[in-house]
Length: 308
Image (cartoon, rainbow, N blue to C red; front, side):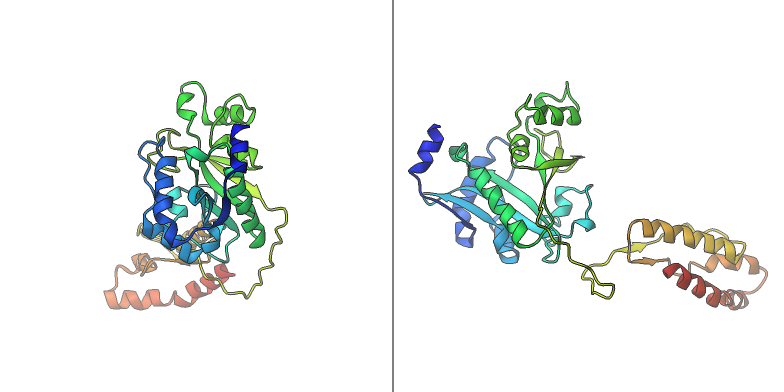
């Protein structure tokens, strides 16, 4: 109640970050991360890059001209990453090259509130702003990897799943996870190794999601252009193939595997058909090459068949 009364006397502004905010932002980050062993703050070049590529997604809440909290986000094509990803992967190794204006998910890459301003509903205001961005851009969800900093105190008694259930049941309070659950997020998955060096969470993280109920999925036309493709590269051990059927069987195996990964293209090794020369070892090199050249058309036809 004391904090709520205090907030009535403060000048509070919710807005997007600017490059001029960095000094104040850094000071706030240092205080917010002081309880996190080994944590480092974002460099000025990182913040500037985020503002350049997605200014609307970088929001802060300012109290009496001091940055009290901040939420940083990207838009990603979530299908390219799936649920089994790390923080390094989702941020493009901290280059933010993963930001895609045509993506379908608002991904939260950072969120903090200065310790002096906690308990003033600043976190909720920042999350409400994120939800508005998600709805405005017609994105299907907000997803983020959330730390579970209190887990280190229960790891000898509870598995991550058991810990999650107790936090959901309000038997345990986790400052990060409890806040997320109270803001209508649900846990999609528990990730291991999401953020290396997070000793408090023992490198576990909860993969959190908030669904946009207003999301309107856009139809994808069969002839629409793709800005990113998935390419499957095949590397196999060269071994003798007695006939065309045996090498086709091997090709089909790899085509099926790559297809399961939803790849657009598959690339086979150069001279992958060389093992067919085994049947012509009694011939000279030039004659053997002429013989396997006879397989060019049948192999081409098989590749065309697999491509459909």
